[in-house]
Structure formats: structure tokens, C-alpha cells
Length: 366
Image (cartoon, rainbow, N blue to C red):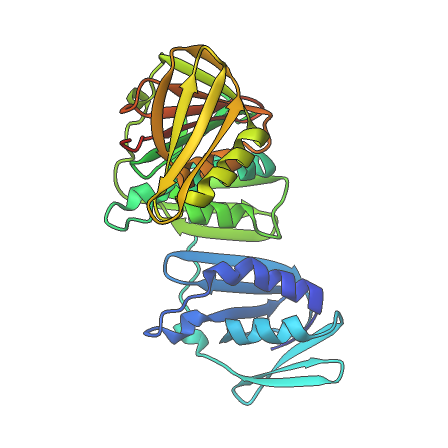
């Protein structure tokens, strides 16, 4: 094997496949990157048993062949090299890397131990705008659960039906739903539960194109864009039925300026480091909402902000960490609407625009 590729192309390719590098000490080969040079193309693969990534870049191939080298070491080497031509070649069970005046000899791992890349024949495939999907994922993926016993709660439910894309995530304490309109090919509704972090990582890849193809088959999902293919497992279990949780009525509705609300929340929460509860007192007559926090160790804080109030006055408590996640998700909007039923009922934050957003949060007892 012998090929030449630019440092910038190789660095970008390694960034694309890096999420698939394994850290499993029982299978050392999975900590590596599989390199295959053939027909003017360098193919890179990584596999950590949960996800498999393949990416292709143009290269000047003098000798075809394949090798597996440490992904971490190769990345660290390429990162330090100048943006010049890099030559990689086999040399006595090692790989020689040359660039300008620098030379490295890396030990190789057995290519025979490298798992075959999964070739998926999707039962259902849909092509969607990647920039829009990325915005939607950013709004919901932090709501996914860290709990491992109920795997499906770590995922985002992605559905596409009647030219509407919807993403839903929940950790049972809160629920995030966002939807947007986009043209999609006619056919059966598309529905899959995909790991939230995985979906976020895919859409943040430097090789992302304007559109992305998503297919599902045999409990696996495959993402295809440009010269990149990303395969992951679909999450097992039945995603919770969430529609009945969202009430269509409320006793109090508060419309808040997002920037003002965010700033006030940051100031008041300084006192809430030990106790994450912040009290929301809505004054319907005065058109005001008072945020307050109390800590036996730190003291008290409060701030009043003007707002539009429909309905009656009431008080409710929320975990400010979770409220911040919502505020960050709607930071591109001017206002957010908070709908309340009472001190013991969930609060629902809503924001409408190109991407409609709903965030349901269970209250904390005052």
C-alpha cells in the first residue's frame, strides 16, 4: 500500500470517522482506523460495535492495499503536520508516514481482525435538509435520558409524515417536541428512534452536505451524505406515548421576552446552586412575574420582569437547570409562551417559527 493525500483532507477525514473509534480494551483492533487505498480513493473506516463509519477522500494511489493503525496516534500525528502532502506506505508490518521533513513509523493491527462494514438495504429511506434537521436536534437532544435501563429514553423519535418533520425526546421529567415543514417524498410515514447523541454527532460532521439520506432496516439506521456512510443501531423499546400529556387548555399563560427572561434567570439562579428550585410568581393584575430563589447556605435572590399575562395569578417551582435548557433552545426567538395549570401540574413552554418548539416540565413542590 502506498498513497499520497493532503494533510487538510486527511485531517478532515479523521474528524469525520473519529466518533466511531472504539475504546474497548478487549478488542484492540477497534481502537484503530482502517485505511484502504484503491483506484484513486482512500477509504477510512471506524467501528466501536455500536456505530460504523465509512468516509472516502481522493488520493494519489501508487500501490493498492489496506492497513489498520491506532486512530488516536494517527490523528495526533496528522494534527501536528503542516498543510502539505502526506505519503503513507507499508514497511515491514509497519506503516511509514512522511510529510516534508517528518517521518513516523507506526505499528499496525491485523486487517484480518477488522469487522466487515455493514451493508444495509433500507426498507424505508427518506432524504431531508440537513441544516434544518441540525437545528431541530439541537433543540431536543439534551432532553434525552442518561438512564441505561430504558434504552429508548436515550433516543429521539424522528417522524416524517405529510411534509412535517417532528422530533420528540423525553427523560420522564421533561418532554421536548419540535416540528417543521419540509418537502419529503410521498409514501408511508417514516418513524425511527435514534440515539440523541448519535443524531447530533452525525449532523455536526464536517463532511455534511445540504441533504442527508436516512434509511432503516433490521433494527439499524444508515445515514448517507456525500462520501460518508454512518450506520448505527435503532434503540429498542416502545417510545412513550406523549400526546395526552400536553393539555390544550391552561389557567394562566405568560408571554416572556426571551433575552430578558434568560438574563433574570441567570442572576436569580446564582443563589440556587445548592437548591436548584426557582419559584415563579405570576401577578396577572400587574402583568409581572417574579423569580426567586432561597438557600439556607447562600441567602435569597429575586427579580421581577414585565410580561403579558392571560388568566389568573399563581405560583409554581421549577428546576432552573431544566428551564435553562429550554431557554437555550429558544434563544433564536424573541418571545416564549409559558402555559400553566397550577402548582402541581406541568408547565409548558412554547415557541413558534420556522421550527415550532414545545417543552413540558414537571414542577418542583414549593
